[in-house]
Image (cartoon, rainbow, N blue to C red):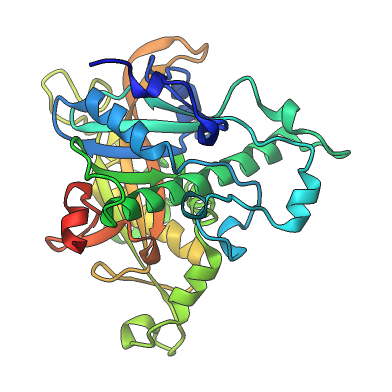
Length: 366
């Protein structure tokens, strides 16, 4: 097959990005389990073509993944850096970070069981972490630094997914051969425990503070100005609450990718314990919806024409002991991403909100 494109020497545009297919990033497991390093891209692909799809996905993402320091990257009026090639910061950020080079980012595949699904993680290179970014007189504490990096990476994957979909739709790049759909993931977390006596109407109450904080972090990665415009646009009855106030319409799309020991018994039937039942659609969707309502403000659920869609993927993550050793089997974790309608990354297909099918994206606009 010749040289692997992912291993080729980076050009000038790749000076801030490492793309590697040399091996899976096994260190990502502990970060995903802790809920601190699950930013990346979840993609579906043809069965038994996971490696080819991963290589293809990395090449598709390579031109669009860039670091931007400004906390309000999408609200400053600057277009996507993947389109304008600038990646500009506002003047105050330029002055503040003038002596600090942008951190080098890494795109690495993460080992996932099952077929037809791949996950690529975006992170800051290990050799260039917090100490190298502390250039001012006041140093950030570790927690503030991690939150800032998580938000910036979350915005980066949102822009990359948007730019990738737009480039395929515009015919700027050929439709992918193996990759089918791509979702930007901004955070991971564990699903809160469920009370055994929880009634059907009380399921939304399972949105614990951890889940609410996670969804709030995901919402912070969205374009606040665009969300406000979506809230006030249209003026249809569907965009108003009972008092006639503008609302933001949203939906929650759910997919369970869990495979392997942990959530299944030896005879392949689902364990009935609450430890695993809490990751079922009927518990996860209402809990995420309740957390989204808390984060977004005045909202209304719309399954046909949402302004924002939350994509929730249940991942299979290798189980680890307290010392970091493999404990055997897999555990479930929620991977959550959000996209606005203006991003053009989701569509209504067969009565459900789904990520844009990249193989057909150029045909639909051609």
